[in-house]
Image (cartoon, rainbow, N blue to C red; front, side):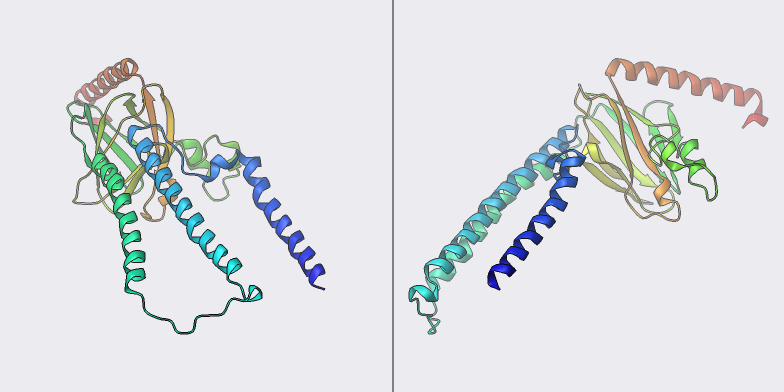
Length: 287
């Protein structure tokens, strides 16, 4: 009977393991289970800290459980071990198993503090953008220029999300993760974001940047990003704070361009907004 139970347990464990492993490999391998490295200077530092602490925890786990298993095997009853019922107090042992964890935590604190300091160090930024959250859109203002615009859910996604729209959301590229006006930043440039909100608390988040920061009414939060020079492209995120009925329809999209392309885009955007302002002044009914 014991043999039958053992075989059944082994078979069940094999089935469960197969169910867990197969989808992971089918997706994109075990790398999907870990924290993403990201494309910014900060995201790489955060990932490095994460992996360092992870391997420290693995080593601690192997040591502790290895010691426990060794003790249970070596001092089992079948080998003639007799339980110590006296439970004598050992001040020396208590000091040792208190100081060792404290020392480990202190060693972990040093690299963690360094990364936290780097996260808050927004000095020497080359570009500052004010980000304002609304229900349910973002406003981006490039400080020191006349460039500013709103970023809302793309028309295709907005149409498909309506009840009884008749549109299959799977037919819409980047459903609920696309906007009409993405934020544009230059690669290889330290960009400071000043975040606030007009109505309720929002949270600006792009996973590949490794950073998330709340946008709070009446308060200006600060964060910075510096995308690697060779990581141009489009990156997507979402509002990460439950901000109301349409919280799920408030994506964040960032276009990362080379410095030269960004300067051209900024000049073109500035000229277009100036033309629109002149047209509105000549014909007030347009606005």
